[in-house]
Every structure is written in C-alpha cells, then in structure tokens.
Image (cartoon, rainbow, N blue to C red; front, side):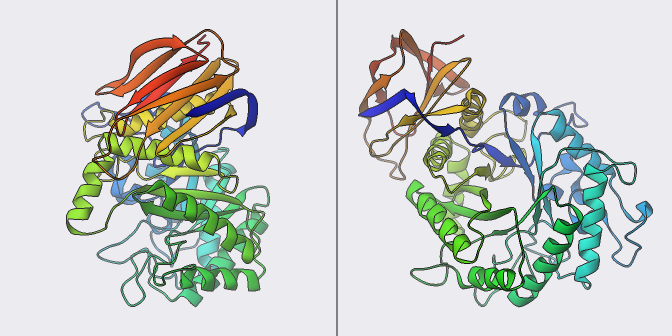
Length: 442
C-alpha cells in the first residue's frame, strides 16, 4: 500500500528535473522546442556536449577552446574571444526561465582529440575562464549580467579505462589534479560569491574493482584535499538500468566526498540516464528504451527515489539535445517523447514547493507535493524486467479531502482516466505506467 501524508512536510522539492542543454531557438525551418521546454519548469540546463548541436552554435559554442580559439592570444582583450554563438544560446536558455549551469571545459571526444588535451599553461587556462565568466556575469567585453551561479570545472576526468584511451582527459590523473587545483583556486578567489565546483566524475562507483570507489576518483580527490582546494559543489555521473544502483551511487558519492573533506558541499548528479550496456545489442536496447515509455518510467523513478536522498541536491538528465540517441524528451522534429512528461510533471511538483511524506512499495515509486495551487502525486511502476505483471496498488492519503483526478501518461501526454475520492483509492498499474493525481485543483 502507498501511504501519503500531506500534513507532514519532509522538506522542499529539490531540482531533480534539471537537464543537460537547453531549448532551441527557431531554426532555419522555423521549428523549435522553446515553448515545450519553458512549460516544463526545468530548473537547470547544464552546458555539456552543446558543441555537437547545430541549434546551439555547433563548433563555436560553450567550450573554452571554442570561445578562445587561439591559445597563444592575449586573454585580457575582448578580440581574443568569440562569444557570438554562446551569447545566443545562453539568451535562449535564460529567456525560458531555466538557470544556466555552465561547464567550463570541452565536450567528450571519442575520435580526434583537441579540447581534451591538457592546456599547455594551466594558469592561463584559468585566466581565460575568468574572462568567460566575467563576460556573462559582469558585462565584460559587451557582455551580460546573468545570474549564473554554478560554474563547473571540466567533465569526467576519470572516464577512461585502466589501460585504454580517455575521451575526456588526455593527461595523467596527477596532471588533472594539478590543473583542477589551479583553476578552482583562481576562479574562487576572483569570484568569491559564485559557486565553483566539479569535476563531474564518471565512475563514482568502482569500475575496476568488485567493491569500493574507483581509484582515479580517490587519487584526484586526494590531490584536491592536499592542495587545500575549497569547493561549493561536487558533481558525479551515473548510468545504469536499476533505481537501486542510483541510490547506492548517491550514498557512495556522499561518503567519498566527505572522506576527502568535501562533506559540506552541495552534490549534483549532473549527468544520468538509462544504460543497460555500452556496446552492441545492449546499447541499441538502451537507446530504444530511453525514447520510449519505459524510459519515462525509469526517469520518473530515479527522480522520485533521489528526492528522498538528503545527500543529493539536484539532478540533470542527459540529454535535451533534440533528436539525439540519449534524448528521451524531444525527437528530431522537436516533438515531445515520453520522458518529456516525466520531466515536466516533476516540474509541477517543483512549482508546488513542499514535499509530502510518502512510502513506496516494491517497484512502485512515489513523490508528492503541496503548495498554494493544490496538491499533486506522481506514481510510476518500474523495474528492468519487461515481463512483470500488472499490479493493483491501494493508496491511502492523509490531508486530502474531496475528489482527485487521476491521469495516466498516454501517447500524447497525460489523459484523465478517472475521478476518485482523494483519501483512499486503488490504482491499476501496468509496468512502466506513469500516473499523475491532482487534488484540490485550482
């Protein structure tokens, strides 16, 4: 039985429906997902792999080496920077009401390496980032005064295998530790009121050992600690097919960050999605899953489960670039896919504000919120066994009078299925169903 008590608040709804990358401006054919993106009440758009997307400015956007295209140029003068495409992209995001979460560094590079090669002067790279930040928050170089609070240094320095290539950092782990320390200290001293963090670890759970934490993570964190680096937030990534794995990773991330002196930092899981396997048939299955109803249920289940984890402050789904394999939100025609409705329905909880206490039962994940505009419950039935049987789930609700409208996610959004007494009712759930229950609707 699901139990929900609207009389008992368990804190605020956290920004669990953040995403990587933002909306698109109207393209040459006049199409855009801007209105849908804005309607979803997405709290953060992390700028990673943006340069893969023509709608965001392609190879001229976001990444440090794409904005500052000649590393030997003078970093103190505006003429050395090409901000044009990134300016357009950030304006589109901020116009949608979503906050930019700026990743300083480069996109992943599976083929020809360019931006992932360690800078030849770590101090100069930090000064270049200083001027990029100043352009967007202080108006430097005919820039802006955006309220961009979060600035993340690099992405997945530990992405490579123990003996294989690393698509995100071409140097050694000690080199990365030195690089990160220089950049973090410089930027925090220059912008003490901004939130500086990272480094967005790829494998917070052990990749090379049966148990424990990935050795490169510990190596990098130990260098940061020994150099007295102070950060405002820590970030890690997670891809898997079970909700339980995400909960374990959250616990591991909190423990390892605390071990190295970063227990007071905010923690963001700022890249995540469903992945059963990274190659062959499992990869193809993963991509099909992400873009279907199962992917929407998985997305909802992870957000609901980690909402309850006090050590996770926010999530950012990968990825919102239209038409890409790992985007379960928008197809190539900017039409919404099932995961869009998981993200946008959580945006409704975020707007309500207060999280109500709730309980799950096996494979049934729940999140409920209340606010001035009413009360709402989201429920999904998820596990990775595609043959699981339907379930009937009794729901007991405290602090809810009158009637409740019960909506099920259908082919083109949520559809009203029935109206029930708000305090007690039964849901008949097929595997991967996503249900929205509205109470005291205003």
